[in-house]
Picture 1: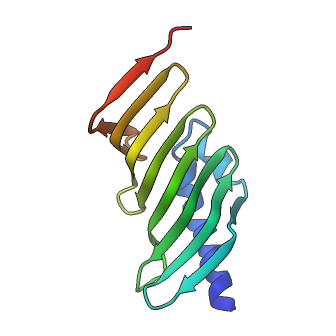
Picture 2: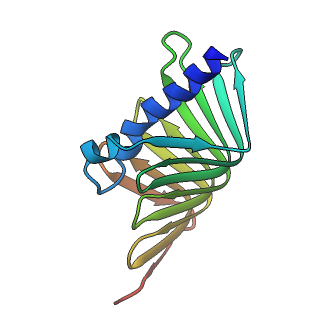
Length: 156
């Protein structure tokens, strides 16, 4: 039981700085907010160093909201830091004014890159972008949409 609680605690602590950098809200302000992870089920697999949140999986910190049918956290072998976070099925990420939806998403902690794939939709204030892949670098704030890209601009 203590390993399970350690895994959940580690997930919440290590994801909070990464998620807080992807929004316009100041990082320090977001990092101080509590992180809540919920799901219908949680399975911890020590063999492959993963924790699987399944069924209505959700991670929320302030205005940041990640939802999917399943969210899997993969830990490094040596120090138990989070290596990657994979969201599968009806993925939706919201940071207040922007929303990204896709079939899958993968967040690589080391590179600080989130990759959305499969019927990607990015909604911003006046813009709607669709495509097959969206790559977003949290550190540089650069993104790239590719594969059958379409952009719709809605004037105010």
